[in-house]
Image (cartoon, rainbow, N blue to C red; front, side, top):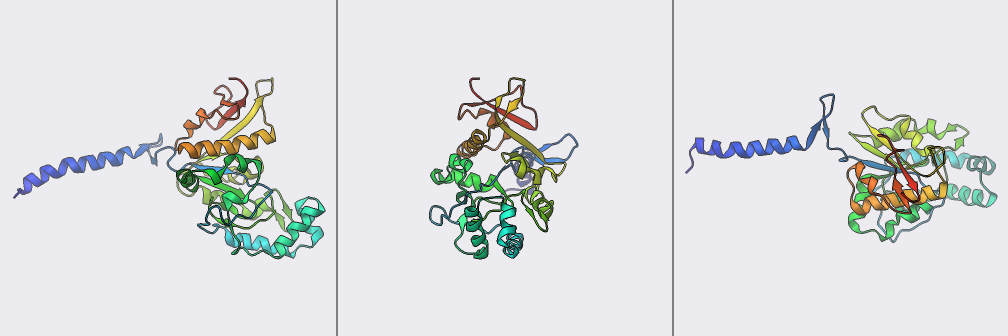
Length: 288
């Protein structure tokens, strides 16, 4: 039998190690507040794509969008528009307008759902290549990737969605979508202490940057070519390709710290320390 003094001597080292472990799991910020390790809550934001597909077989739907009620409201607004009014919102051809007008008239937000990560068919998503990812990489996307959407607001990779056409910069008769969403998307994205890696276009990232809490760091990633004047010139198609490759790169390596993305060397891009800053990471195309 151990005496109470012996049990106390055995307990103290264990208790000390437990407390020491807790201390290591947090770091002190300059203002003295406790914050989680950098990267622990990092979120990657990307834009959606105009072209969408239905794929109910490749990967399962795991959840419904956080803002499904707001999407339902927008659906009713779009349904209330005449064909000409809807076409003016979309600013597209008759063929595309006809297809999307019919979509909204027959839309059911609870049936024939596709995981958001598979629903968009743009260049960025092709280079992201989620269909061929390993399970661990998909798990990474579930935890870290968020898709900004004019219709759904904010999407997790495995939220079930239907095909739609409604860009963030669209102007409805009742007002623009920035006014509709206000700070809702940023508030949901930044819930808790979060670091954001911005791979979205300016059109979409505006709904976050305008309402970014002071304690949240958002770092923009720029993919471009030297402009000959010490700056960077972005080219749309190449930038979209690189954004998709960057998500694939991060998922493949399970990157948890923002600084690790400087190792990205795909599509002939390399990190430019000279042109980068704390909140802006620049990757240039061409020889280093």
